[in-house]
Length: 98
Image (cartoon, rainbow, N blue to C red; front, side, top):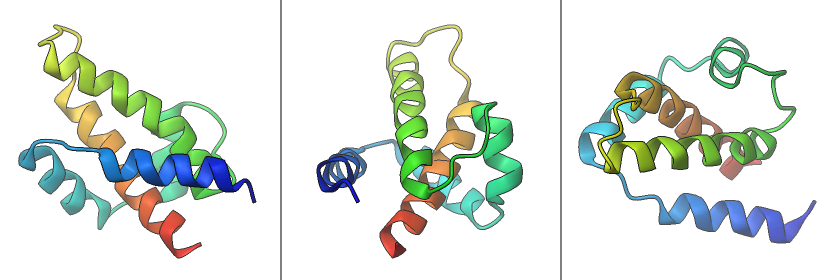
């Protein structure tokens, strides 16, 4: 295992601060999260082999969505942001159990 990468991912996850509505929606949605179905749809690539690999793909996507949200970008999608956060929450839980 690559400990520096694991520590980086853990610190990035710990540093996330999002509005309560987004967090609540992500937590609620995570109850229905199905890795195979949802990651394929969200990432539009092959399903990453591990939660760590999924988080490495999801974190930059979420960061870009957060920048769009904060700047009121007309291309910001609340639905996409919640989808990505659902995956992020679910994969982070699996990562923590690994």
